[in-house]
Length: 192
Image 1 (tube, rainbow, N blue to C red):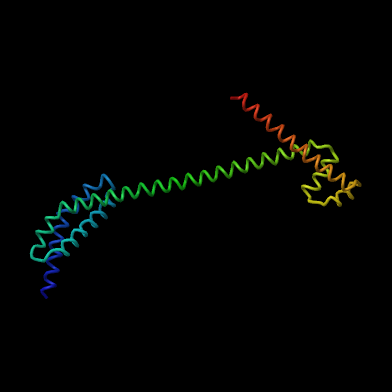
Image 2: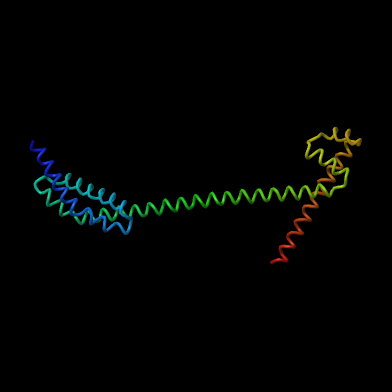
């Protein structure tokens, strides 16, 4: 019965403390974190003060001890609000970094696609500049994956000739691509 009475008095005292401090804390925090978050922080700060007083004091001086902790309630609330602000900034920075990483990956993907398309286009141009028989041998071997023997039979030439046309085709394609890169580099230098 005595414990029930003390608990009821504690509730009444805390309610008075809450009424005296709660809205003042919200008014102080609202410019920093807004009303809704300010209410949450104020509630947590008051609870921390209440638990601290309840843990460290007897019931006899509970009221005086609790009301003496008004400044501590403001300090706790302010520190919690600043902590939330810092945490929010860290989260925002993390999300910004993630967005930049995704954007960068997307750009790299686009760049590699463009580079691959350009390289494929350049290779096709090089193959189209090959002499006709050399081009046929090169296409059948590199695109269709046919063996030297199959190509030799199809074109009625020896396997050694197939090998020679392949070597010549690779050499001419390489020369064409190098020539195109040199041409592109000289054009870029002229622009600069």
